[in-house]
Amino acid sequence: METSTVKELFNRSGDYLNKRVRINGWVRTVRSSKEFGFIELNDGSFFANLQVVYDESLSNHKEVAKLITGTAISVTGELVKSPGAKQPFELKAESIIIEGSCAADYPLQKKRHSFEFLRQVAHLRPRTNTFSAVFRVRSLVAYAIHKFFQERGFVYVHTPIITGNDAEGAGEMFRVTTLNFDKIPRGVENVVDFSGDFFGKETGLTVSGQLEAEAYCMAFGKVYTFGPTFRAENSNTPRHAAEFWMIEPEIAFAGLDDSMDLAEDMLKCVISYSLEHAPEEMRFFNSFIDKALFQRLENVIKSDFERITYSQAIDILINSREQFEYPVKWGLDLQTEHERFLTEKHFNKPVFVTGYPKEIKAFYMRQNDDGKTVAAMDLLVPGVGEIIGGSQREERFDYLEKRMAKLGFNMQDYWWYLDLRKYGGACHAGFGLGFERLIMYLTGMTNIRDVIPFPRTPKNAEF
RNA sequence: UCCUCGAUAGCUCAACGGUAGAGCAACCGGCUGUUAACCGGUAGGUUGUAGGUUCGAAUCCUACUCGGGGAGCCA
Image 1 (cartoon, rainbow, N blue to C red):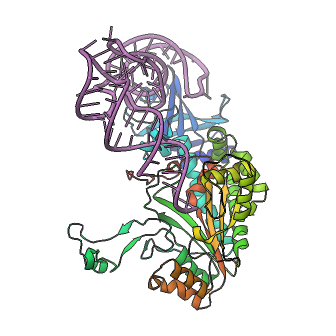
Image 2 (cartoon, rainbow, N blue to C red; image 1 turned 120 degrees about the vertical axis):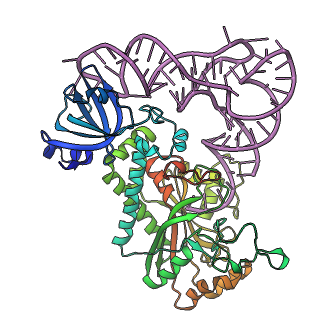
Image 3 (cartoon, rainbow, N blue to C red; image 1 turned 60 degrees about the horizontal axis):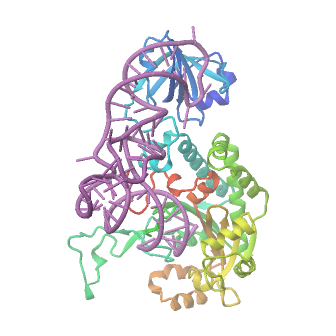
């Protein structure tokens, strides 16, 4: 007999009702009486459990009555209408085969666990309701992002994981090396000599695929990256991880407004996709994780994102009469408290802030005519803060070269990046979207460690 | 990295200077439709680690380790 999935039973219950089926899965909980009992079975295909009913007619009835949470079983029986109120149908077991027993010290219980505890059993937590929902949505959203870009003619570029350039100084890099730590070769002034290293130069894990994506953008016109990114920052917050995934679209013959349009369109599409394709999971988040989730997401889908300049943001903050811990002054970067005020209190929706002072932004951003600001944009969203950072790129060779020289860059390290301006450099723009921050925003989960299967953070690389 | 709070049974917590407890889980038993099932019972602890104060420390002090929240860095 062919094995069915719980998902199939729920989606096409009419086809299965009063027919024999077999389901393989894991026991979530057992409620047994003297002569019969119930098993909540989850097979991973669907958020909801299947209720299995058994009675003394089972040859192994005694063992089944003692099944504990976590056991892997295979159930064959007839799918029948359920007299119970909480499920439309149930599986009346004719045979239950115990595929894998579960030791008595199984850490997961049928009651609620703290997320802190579940992080310590990251190998088991996908078996819980919350993490089952989070990681199914994560999978769906990854697909939705590819779908969004592919349908719009973007080319998916695999930028390198190992890289020789700490491109934008986006963060500290993890070093990649095959040098013997007991005998590190040193040259003049005791500086480490990387010439004998695997790549013959100093290399690390990528902190951004943007510079390489720009190269492909100048060939394909519209590209995006979607891959792992690494930052060796000692960041201890619920929004930072040492290994995370980033989506970086790059579009040619386009400016800052185009990239904002793209970002807004993408977010709306992805949110709609999740609501449509993971309704059970999203309802769960709205009920148990964040009661305002649907309201917030629907607000995002329907409303136009606010677009203000950095200068306007400063004015709003100064005129707000709100007490801030950090000073608000043109030229200083916006602090988290300022960003939260703008997106959560003043506008209460996603806000693009553009035109930051060039001193506080990366070298590659296009300089505005005022000589003071660059065509940068950050997208701030309620609850998560900065979810997107982007800009129009400086496509003018001389402007870029001067800027890099002023910041003390070694031009030889960026020869190919400058070449892109030399050979048919067109105006272009793009942004980076933190994939996990998007998942947090979509699910209402408030810690990045709970939206990554096996999170990597300072002092934590277990599993 | 800084500030702050915390660490007690497998889990969630109580006890706040005087013999370490409860609910859930586990185990044993009961129960003819359960829904975090219910009812009775059993077992389970060098109170994160190392020092110190005290007649006496889970409780007070110091350091360390790990974790939460806030900040910085950013996505």
